[in-house]
Amino acid sequence: MNELFIITRRNVKLFFKDKGMFFTSLITPLILLVLYSTFLAKVYHDSFVSNLPKSMDIADKLINGCVGGQLFSSLLAVSCVTVAFCSNMIMVHDKVTGARRDLTISPVKNSTLSLSYFIASEIATLIISFVAMAACLLYIGKVGWYLSVTDILMIVVDILLLTLFGTALSSIINSFLSSQGQMSAVGTIVSSGYGFICGAYMPISQFGSGLQKVLSFLPGTYGTSLLKSHAMRGVFEEMKNQHFPDDVVEGIRDSVDCNVYFFDNAVTDGTKMLIVAVSVVVLIAAYVVINMIRGKKTV
Image (cartoon, rainbow, N blue to C red; front, side, top):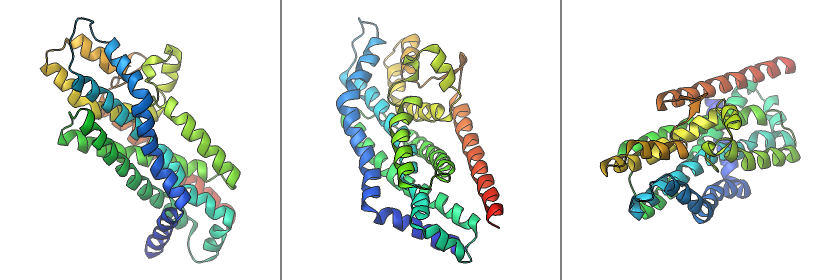
């Protein structure tokens, strides 16, 4: 246990001492927030307004609160996973530099070393994700605040689940990488592609029906939808208080992926959370099996 603590602390320190890796991970969510608010805000605003009856007069604060919640949740949905891939690169870096070989020569078990990478990546990803969350909350406070304490707590739970999902997924993929070129390729693919397939950059409701069905099999879809549901719950509650027609509210929820469907069947928030949690367990189990097999090969 002491070895696990020492190596985990070493991995966390290495990540934060690598200024290039650390600042890239930290600045990326903040840059995304600026880009989202600058470019995607108008797209989300138009999507929101298009679902409203033309005769309905809506306060700007409510519209901005809805758009801000969508931006907030989309950014966190992406960064929780992409930052995990970045923080988990310590695993690959140790292979490239030969540090992992030196560590395995010592009495440290391969299982202890693999677990230390996982825990260190989760800790680093959580720190950066919560910094990003704080920045997003400041943004929401400026454009239109409708969050309750319960909403914020549920968002924290969502972040915990999604960072675990990202860490488990990156641990499996990174365990097969062994060069700087592979690291760069995987980082580029994940950072550019994940936001689209999880519905963060563009709502899945805007895709074709066939693609929607395919994406409904991916856990990231439900993680993004969870964040959107909790980040925008207060907005929809305010709409009901202002006597918005139920079909209008549901139309908006559908358009921003707060409501997601598995082959035309609505998926509840509890089911979404269960899907992500089960996915985390399956990925962690796969990571354990991979390391057990590799451990036997080195014996």
